[in-house]
Image 1 (cartoon, rainbow, N blue to C red):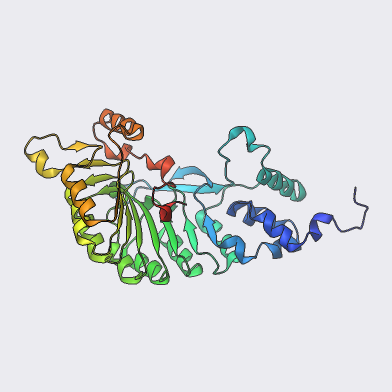
Image 2 (image 1 turned 180 degrees about the vertical axis):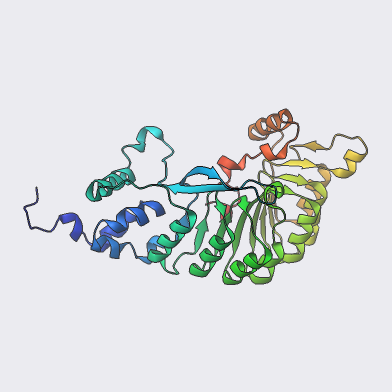
Amino acid sequence: MEKSGETPKWETLDRNILSVIFNKLDAMDLIMGASRVCISWFVASHDKSLWQTVDLAKVQQVVVSYSPESRDKVRPVVFYNHRVDDDEIERGLSFRNVLVNFYQCLHGEVEKGRSLREVLIEITKLSDTAPKNLFFNSHSYIKEKDLMFAAQRMPNIEKLVLPRWCYHNKKSFRFAFSRWKNLKTLIIAHDHNLNGGFEFQAVGENCINLTNLKYLGYLHEYNAEQIVRCFQKLKRLSLRCSFLCVRGVLSLITGLQNHVILNLTHCVFHDVALLRQNVPAIGPVPSDDLVQAATQKLDKLIKCSHDCSFCKAWWERLTLTSLDKSRWHPYDKDWRNDEIEEFVF
């Protein structure tokens, strides 16, 4: 036990040791816990190696209430808390919980939820412009000013993950992506029913180094046309866990001149032309024409086998909900994964 007047040993830990320890923590643990323990820990929390990736994808979110409807859609008021570990049994014994409890006992307070803006402000106080990867939770609601703030304070982002709840106008998108000139990989979960069209043009005009795109949602033919027009440098494209218009996918295959890898795993395909002829044209398996076009043009096509259990499960759920695409979101739990390495986060 330390004698009165002596400096606690945990305050004098070597910065390299602290860096190793802090690397085990997530962003919330650093900004609301470790960085507030003492001066030496606060200084160590500024280590740039800790902030190469800002991962908010596993941060626990608490929807407190709902704001008035806008654009006929209800916008959630979301607050962030410390991450909940995947394994409930080990959660109470995890290192991060020990540290959080230690901080709370030391300062006599219990952390409450924080808004996204508050989280971003605290992160950028420590990270400065170091982050190269920025991942949002799949259910995050990003306000226009939040996105613009993140872009202004974290201009060196190379890999970005945007959620479905993202309402923006052209001005905010142009501002944000004009700051992200180094962006190479973009992952977007897009739901036209929730947030309207995505501003592909704003991204394409500013992010000339973008070579990897992952699109999760409903791919209409006009979405595909926008992607072809705005992202001619694309090499890798993943449409994993999406609802796809066959003609749209074909236009991507033929229109993207530098495209080499396409991921079509766990998708549902529909063909408008066949539907008009009363021919069954909706299913979890790509048509032979689509597969042939892809294999002839691309270096690699990734698709599911006919007996894929994942596809069968989601197809059953989809048909049970009368093709209500708003209820069909397999990426809620699986969107961090991908068969193309560049899209794993």
